[in-house]
Image (tube, rainbow, N blue to C red; front, side):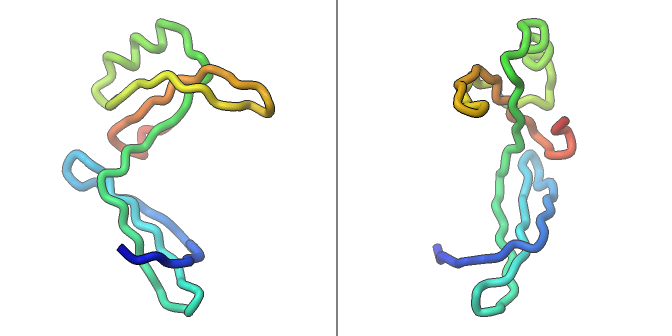
Length: 93
């Protein structure tokens, strides 16, 4: 696999069966146009310590692939979040 220094101009995605392909369009330092494709991308978002009712609702949602407890910083303070991984980017709130 090659390595490039790329300035990204735009991005898009498309569905590929059960997965998502993210396409990044840009130019290399040498001025060559380039498209980078990342297959099987799983979009996600974080919820700040959601109540159990929200967690239960997400567990029943067929769009949700995975729920994972994580700790992230807000400023200098570490907080509990729920990472919600879903099937399609257009479903991210």
